[in-house]
Length: 283
Ligand SMILES: C[S@@+](CC[C@H](N)C(=O)[O-])C[C@H]1O[C@@H](n2cnc3c(N)ncnc32)[C@H](O)[C@@H]1O
Image (spheres, rainbow, N blue to C red):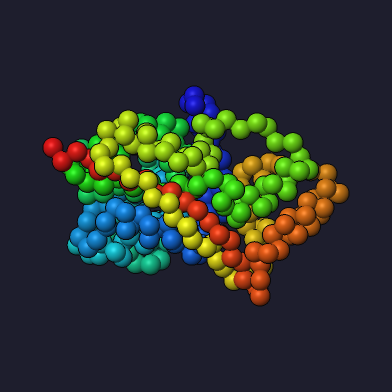
């Protein structure tokens, strides 16, 4: 990714910051199992100094803040000003005093070596311009023997929350061929791919854990459709290029495809993620 592409990607995240804020409660609930998985894998507990990379609208920082308690601390980071603002405002509303906020990119961290006990990233490493540099930096800023843990999506096929709408849209509109190494939600869906980067960056005891859970909410298909089409950059682009006649047809086809995930006023999608963790050498 060249610097121009990188700036464009960050501008896109800036545009999306308001939607991440708008849907913050839903996002926090839907993806809570990922936060729990990170907390468990990185063995986060009371009194620890935790570093969150690409914290978006505030997770997992906000949850971890209450786990580490007043004797611990969280350093939330994200390169996008709009994300930092919304996360910081939410921490203020909750009266959290053990979180600090810093606008910075994963590959160039303004922190000293060994400044934190553990580093976590929920759904952000797949968007780093240079994931190897980002993982190296995460290892640099944790203490010796400290954990680094990254949560990423498993393949699309195991994640109908995303694929149901995307597959329908693909039937109607030709999408450009994807580069498997370009920033994307499924960039590290292939088992072993991110683990190899952790090993290459010098992490020890690298472990990849598969996490199966349900994305569940009391929302209708209509609300799900709005959330997906507002929050997905690729869907927004595609929707913008549709003729007025195509949109209702695609929406109806998506509703038909998603029907089995909406029962008795509740949405419930099976989901699969990978949590890849490693440790910095003890010496
Ligand atoms: C899908 S969101 C995840 C946000 C949050 N961690 C969550 O799980 O709700 C991805 C985040 O990665 C951030 N991001 C993009 N490029 C990054 C980079 N180079 N370094 C750190 N974070 C980055 C984006 O700004 C965005 O907030």
